[in-house]
Length: 130
Image 1 (cartoon, rainbow, N blue to C red):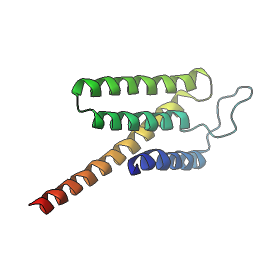
Image 2 (image 1 turned 180 degrees about the vertical axis):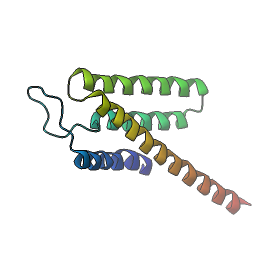
Image 3 (image 1 turned 135 degrees about the vertical axis):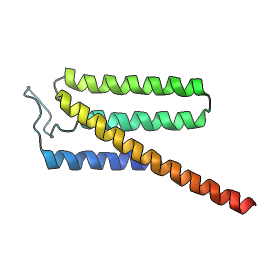
Image 4 (image 1 turned 90 degrees about the vertical axis):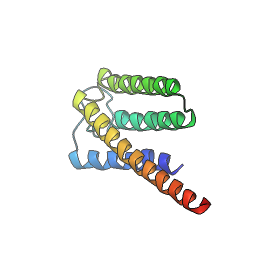
């Protein structure tokens, strides 16, 4: 639960912070969103949501085949989400690339933290049982 809160919740906060620091306007189009464009929140948050779900599913099902299938679907979904933002003229391609990059970096940091925490807990359990 804490992993999801950290990846998605804090990830959204990071996205909003970067948007407010850079303040890049969106592409010109009628009825455009009023928020800033860089980095793409949809690309970043989509990656964080989908990759977090993929990580949890692959942790639950230890099958390598299931894991490869889940991660393949996750990557395809994230790519399609980002491309849809460009195709709909809500973002420039660089906004989407930045959203993916920032989201993936934050995801890896969160997973690294989670995995190291899990190892520490397992070491404590081994010491207690010995």
